[in-house]
Image 1 (cartoon, rainbow, N blue to C red):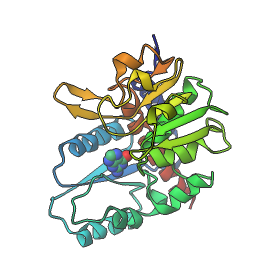
Image 2 (image 1 turned 180 degrees about the vertical axis):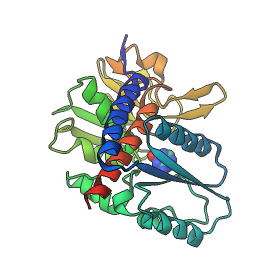
Image 3 (image 1 turned 45 degrees about the vertical axis):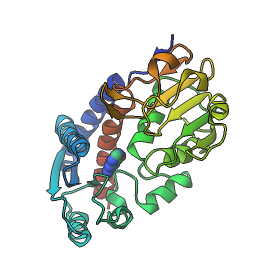
Image 4 (image 1 turned 135 degrees about the vertical axis):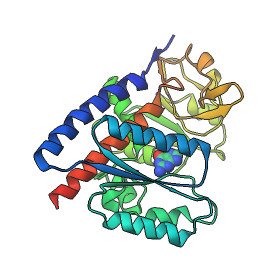
Length: 287
Ligand code: GUN
């Protein structure tokens, strides 16, 4: 039976560390780190995420400003808000919640967010810096996963990390991070996706398997090597509740360690966002 990698408990530890660091920073500089979150439209999951981010900021002594815009907002209107937030010195981190309504190009908006305030690390400059191994911000979900592996002392150097999913938010940056010559990385990395042939053959080679496909219980026990570490990024809302991308019941019998859903990767994502917001405030104060 696999060890459960308790993301919820780790997130609590990280938040306590960030709260302490925030207090110290505010005492020294008089600056309260502040996150601006922009939500366009009524997507129910996004509403919950944004509210959670607001609560999380308050708990660690950070400010937050939530901008709720109607579904019909034009790209020009959203760009105008982003520009305003870029210029507002009291805002340190900017997060535009995805997905955006179809009339708005996500790329156009993400390109417009100042790279210095880009706490999601979605700006091309920040993506490039990650690839080159000199990151400014790390994207919250892959950052949380790397921190989870580090804190549970799961070795990654020379290990085969197989990532299922090639999204810009998780799969691609996760691969870029794990392949670096760096602590908590140094892995051999494979990225699999919907066009991959013989997927189970590849996933069975994984020492660390990261599932980020967005399909409920997609990874089954026959796809996992005995003793592998399995990280489940999925949050799939089904009739029987929220389930991950991994068939937890089956896979936990094979894996040496596994993240649950909920209580695994999810809570870490917000903790890393707080860490990035503090970092952005520190950058701003050095200028
Ligand atoms: N939508 C789903 N995940 C994310 C994320 O990490 N950041 C933002 N801004 N939107 C998301």
